[in-house]
Image (cartoon, rainbow, N blue to C red; front, side, top):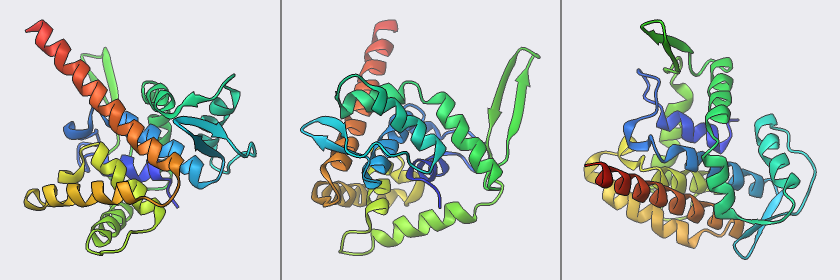
Length: 223
């Protein structure tokens, strides 16, 4: 089974180009951070006390990457606000995102493609090798939004992060996107799956908005 972060990453990658879609280029890192914290909450390792994240069970988790994130939280000298963790992990996501991409390559879902320009600039993309898993995810979230009852906790978290990363239009037809966003927001507010998950999603949204605002100010100042 893929982690929530891996599912979100798959949806954010352009199948042919293997790079993050423009729509999610600045927000995905915070969405992945929110996914890590939400998954730790589902594994009953962390919980929210007010706006802060606290460790409730120090036992390691099975997933090595998730455990690496958890170890960093455990090593903190004090409890920090969930938004601080989302921003902290998000702003240092490159290495962990590459690790997730490599794991998806190992599973045969993506392939690794190396590029260079003038023999100086190099970069790696991850186009789709087998889209079966991504199609399963797309069907799952689409069918969930066709129901009136709340979906399972993992699907609801994924939907919330899809919305936070502005990926709704990448999954649903444009004419349906506004209604789907509205439905996801309503469900997120009703989320019965724990305060830490709610706070992680809220913190992801806040970090995305803050980053967008900073980019707009920077762009305005340079024009």
